[in-house]
Image (cartoon, helix red, strand yellow):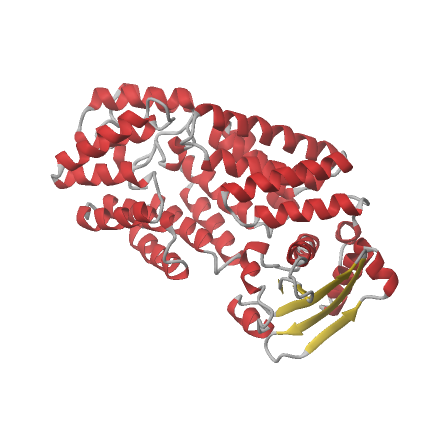
Length: 465
């Protein structure tokens, strides 16, 4: 099922956030039905144009049914019209226009839509599924509207968007201190900022970690059945705490609660890969990709998992598919460059990594310098090393410097900078797979390397598996 953004009928477009917010709520509700695979908000938000062909969107998203709707607000009143269609033949499966009473109560309206969609699709719901479908996380309409404004900005996937989202989630919590979803939104935002802010300062990262944990724990105190919160907390435990046992438990719990939550699968795939469980890692990444097949992110991460598992040719093919979905996907070029490094195709690696840098991928500079050094362009590699070393005085990027020294073959400097990265607890230590990447082949036999892996709790694995 694809739930398309509800189209605001007001000419000024002020209700765009409300239309997408209702869509997001319905995706959340319907996504808890295990018989349904519902495309995530990130996959459908591009279909917000007023003239969007719903059936064409459904075919592109490779779904069997599509739900489209329109929304019109007049003061406190909302009018909603909805239609559920079979993508194969365009047949209308169900249509709905909320009554005046249901439209006056936005929560009753959403309950009616989600329950009747399930009925129209002839789904037999379990008692827990029926309860989750009817559950309200707040009865406070102003708090709800602040929450969906937060989700609207969160879905923009930019630092400015996350900061605005945090403001709205906090305002929602002020109106309803027991609003679990608003705490979940905070946890999501701070978890992503932990990852995106890793180059700003160690303090920025630690601040985001603390706030993500606080929000997640408060959300789970109120409602421990929120899969998204378990996944966010597990991501922090994996990437920052390096508590792999707790992280595994959190990802498993998230997937038990909502098997169709794609981020839980691809984050779990990363953990399994770090622990050397490559077959299971690829399986989780494939599950994430099947849930959101048009996402360059899920496609790219599948490529990354295949590369870690030693299936480099398959990884390269998968990454090309990801870049077809989004030619500006910087991480796709970055991961492609890593594949070429593994194959010792340094010219191809340099080309891919330069494209990654042009698209905004800062972490690619270290890999580029590594490839340059091994290709014989040591002076160019040294220029990048000088830049990274200078920045490392004020930014937590010691791990990048260690990579360049590995390319230049300076073993002692590699360990000097790896120790600094360990002290910084940089998430990049796991992104670059310290225990398996070919960057470290020249130091893998060193007792200092094995000691570092032991302190991090990582198993020793070879770089080709």
